[in-house]
Image 1: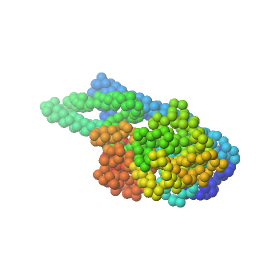
Image 2: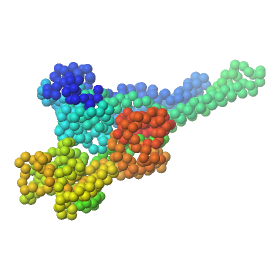
Image 3: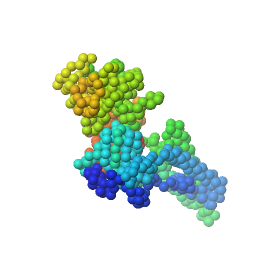
Length: 622
């Protein structure tokens, strides 16, 4: 079931649970037995013996083994037979060793401590291992928690969840407990759901677990990976074809040699001895013609390739993958954290009626900068490490980059009161001691902020804001947004004393507009050069992301990915639009698209298969 389009009481009824008391311990135990542990399953591991015998499945290896048997038994060339078998065994041992070594490295990466979760059971809040979570459990969430399972949110107090690993969303998502009216909502837009393996960055919440283990959204991805078809690499196909061609040619030549040898002999000499001798000659010729060193040479070269890649911190699970990388035609890359830094960064700041770039100097007493720093919940640890919402940490990092002593400023202008952010009014305010007065710092959605603004500061002069100035601010906001920047409005005012009861109705009124700040998860410095280098090598880069269409298109343009498409207006497609295309049409037109936005994991599989249907070697990264 979807659950995001169901009312909370209906979800409670469907899952036979209680928001007030949670499940009983007895019921939780029954459900754990029924649904199993809340953990992802993986493919059954193959033993070393099975891996060893897998190395003998190549056609060339089979030909060599037959050649060794024939050479020894028929031709009595035991030395040749032994040499061939030694080569075959060395080849198998090298392949087995490399695969085992890679698997061990991957297993080491998987070893992580099992996180715990807070659940309500028998009307008591307990901390239990996340593996013991079952459908129907009521889970409590706080900032810093990893979501243990898929759940329908029932409480969302200023709740923000980082979902980039699952959906590609570059910034934390504001969550709500409201029922979604539409029955078909994309994964990234299900704001009343929380998904396993994502994390809470802000606020708190509660939710009813709707799916655990392999039934979660991340579990569906694991299922797809476990069920992915094993495809032969170009090298393996070529070697198999070479083996078949050589075998046919060698057998044909040997047959000709045998027949010619028999026919050339005198009729009187055509006896069984001649037949045996000519057969041995033909067998010897066949054994001599088979390139028994080829598989070993290929294996050694690929093994050397894996060592070279290992020096660059890349793990190669199977040897032929080294060659496949070199034969790649298409690279399908995720955006967030792969092509971009997965770190929000200030790029534009609008104040005094002008847009400034992030590297332009800003004065320490600029009200836009003060509001960025003071209306901010970022925690600054020793060494300057920033903890908190990525949007807020970006503002503090901007201040650091401007050589502002943020910690000293926060000590001097201490926070006295606050009105926390919530997803309804989309604002956050703090009241800070500021000399003999108090400074109210406000930041939030520009359109919501402007509703509460009565004045504007231009070059230190405060005056009533005009409709024309509001239109200029909205135009600057629109321009930033069209360039895929996440925009926040900044405002302030001075008051003579703290509030008796600080609320949005008194704190966030009669504000002075200070500015706008535009942020983006910027491209990695090396990514643009990598895309260009791949293009020079004849490799096309395609972006596949769960992030929004405008953001994806902007980053793709900056990286040069959209230049690959003949028609840039049609080069960007969303997952919803892709779902409407037939497989036949999509396979024929897959080269038209360079950017896929708001896609699901299932869409990614379909995109790769469409390219493969066009005989392209596809690499997926992200």
